[in-house]
Image (cartoon, rainbow, N blue to C red; front, side):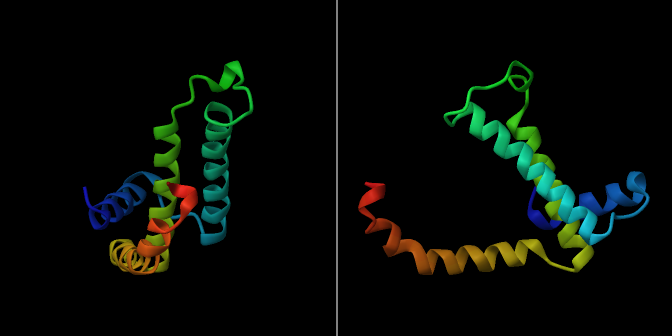
Length: 108
């Protein structure tokens, strides 16, 4: 699935099941909450914090998908073509960062 289709699927889901989009500020708060859940898993599973028993069954992929869903909602409701924006950003990052990363001794 490409990003354009993902945006359309989310829009269709909202219309069929969600009644309407939450407003942008609510979705921003929701995004922050979902990113926090991802951060908790990463910090405890891959970082130095110990993982609580209640966190061991948390699915990182599912939490990342929650983040993606809310990002797609925000893009839809603010009129952002996320596929175009992503391609533009990837092109800019490639031009800007190629030599910088290859010349970074910390990455060798």
